[in-house]
Length: 154
Image (cartoon, rainbow, N blue to C red; front, side, top):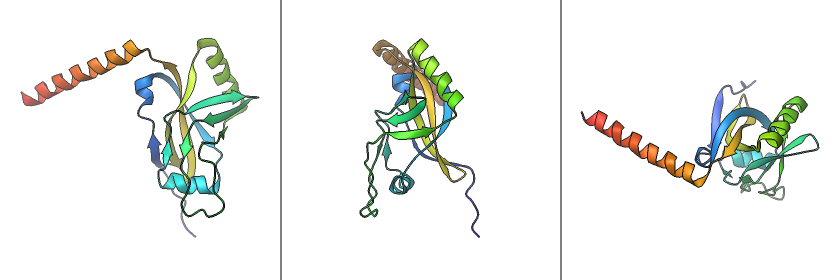
């Protein structure tokens, strides 16, 4: 009998999410996938650049996430850009929907990972940054990097 894998192994992270959004709250959810999608995720072939979560009829769907086709799947290929249902409790979906409607927030995928043998996705309740906010963040990063360099030199 083989042992179940334990711990967390990150498949992919959305590093641009912190650039474009101010991340406020994080939520973990399961995701419904087909077999070829799981195999493709094991290879790390995912892109969430345009990913977001849409809530309709008390169900959450992940849109805009591209999971590439698996080369050895044969005839049982999946559609790379299809919407995928998220597995969340009804009360979680309801509270997220009300926050999104009231405050003008959006749900953005930030991380995809294996947890105890199951694929999970980390979602962030986010508020979009303005262009001048992004520029200000880049300037602050540059200043911090320069001061860190000077501290290491001294």
